[in-house]
Amino acid sequence: MRIGCRALLPILALFTVTAARADDTTVFHCQPGPWGRIDYSYIYLSAPESILDDYPLPSPINRWCFVDRSQDWLRNFLANLGYDAATVTRLVNDPRSSPDEENVVTLYPSEEDVLALSESNRETLTLELAKYIENPYYHDPICIPDGDVTAWLRGIDLPANVIDLIHRLTYKNGEGYFFSDIRLILKYATSDNQARQWIKALTRVRAVMANLRVDQTDDLAGLRRYWSANFHRSDSLPMLDAAAELPGGSQLDLTHLLPPLPRRLAYSYISPDIERSGQTPNCHWTSLNFFNYTRQNILLDLKLATSQVLENYTAVSPPYTFGDVFFFLNEDGNAYHSCVFLADNLVFTKNGENEIMPWIVCRLEDIKQLYGREPNYKIQVYRRKWPEGE
Image 1 (spheres, rainbow, N blue to C red):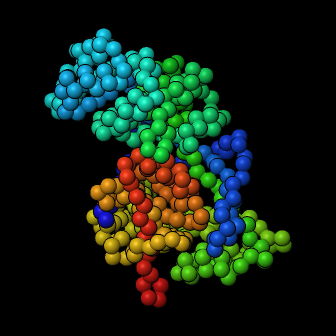
Image 2: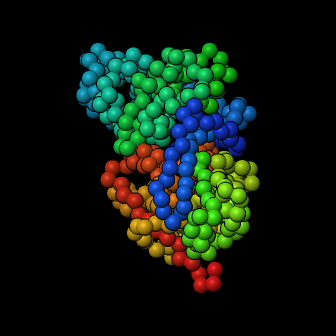
Image 3: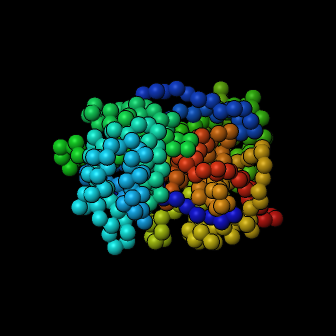
């Protein structure tokens, strides 16, 4: 296995977070297991205006970039998307669309051109555009959980026509639903401030706020063993014991049971002290530092991170336990994402190395939606080997 990492949503760098609950206050329940009785609700994290103000907005001019593609190929590709001959000629013969010195051809479709695509043809187009980093919002698109635009934007003040566009332009790729046409909606903003508010809306990330219900009737010895990784990391156990001793028991926020480093990082964005390392922490840094008392920035080096896994972890099969690392592998066996198993379907993760992505607790199903774009991907799980006496 070789480790790599994919950055997501390359728009802005963020350092703080505001959390907003969706109107849907449904409480979900984890399956019973050695982790105890856990329930959770969805929350949505978004970026503050004070940070967004420091960064340039994307251009509202819509564009599609193709690399090393001939004009004949482009004409055939556009025709297969259902465009008529006049539209194909207009797009390909646009004087701005001549190949540049790196053989990148840029097309400038109108809003009508974009909306004319059928659902299946939109998927075909976005798969092609996602191949090129020159199309940042297609290469690393915004994931809309469960494809539910209404829930994702609930409580956000966006014009009806913009919300309608997001609905119409959301597309499926692999196991998830995505939105990439940021430029297209920004042209409807009437001011710089409004455009920034819309960008803020598009930074929303769904996470879960989870609680462990515990009282004296629970298997406290089993819970203590599970949440300490078989007593290798016991610093959260006093909190567990205290919650169980309360009359009638208690609800304990799951973050209180995480090791010190992820406990501090949960639901937050990159802070200046972490940035001093010169490289943004990614998913693998997060996963392999999970049990470390002090963060090891050497894990930012992908070769060294791979070596760490091969030397200090062992591949395991179900049942999984607290702290196991789930690696998402592509067809070549390279790990392009990782996250840490907490309990049932809940994981701890940082989805990408971009500063815009916070550390969160979320469902494994949401990770699959986001990273299930790789064809024939698989998940391989590794467990830390504990040194004798630790």
